[in-house]
Amino acid sequence: MAGIKVHGTTFSTATARVMATLYEKEVEFELIPIDMRTGEHKKESFLALHPFGQVPAFKDGDLQLFESRAITQYISHEYASKGTPLITTDTKKMAIQSVWQEVEAQKYDPVASKLTFELAVKPFIGMVTDLAVVEEFEAKLGTVLDIYEKRLGQSKYLGGDCFSLADLHHLPTMDYLMATRTKKLFECRPNVSAWVADITARPAWTKVVAMRTY
Image (cartoon, rainbow, N blue to C red; front, side, top):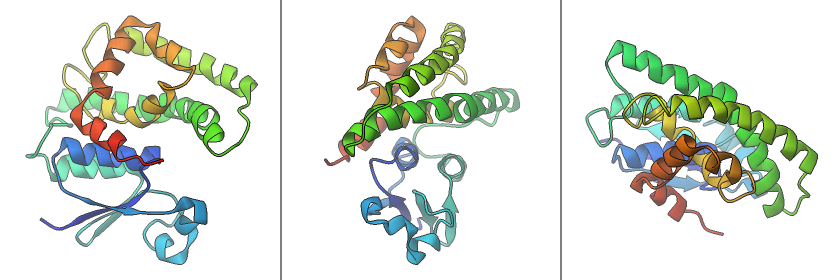
């Protein structure tokens, strides 16, 4: 197997998304640390891997990719026979999973990422959290989670009865938010709360979390 290299940082939600997928698929990889504090991601050497200067950048042999969700799709298809099945070949089930992957990317992530920045990133780098922004985006997240609560009353996971990329893609921001005041929005909804407990306890995800160093 060609050596897989993930250029990024364990604190990055996008990098963590890719790493979780690789661990679920039981595919070996090498993490190449990128020091974003010194602007390494904006240097020419890194821009050759990711033209937008963001992490992660991904290489599998002569294949070079960026954008975390595109990378997780590639991993899930290329290594379909290994580890956890994160996609399906059943057309109708695939369509349903795709819907909820889009919901994560278009509805959940913009809100969750803003809250993660305000409640997790800002305190870590010494900035002041804007509580007005937090309240605004917690209301928006609550609206999304109301829909999740109904969906998770119909199936164990968002994409159906099996864990898939539709669930995995939520893990990085969810993990940060569950250590903040926003966790109450997840915990007060029984179906959502059970889903969060389930997917955050997956061995692949615990490996990602264990790799963070402070």
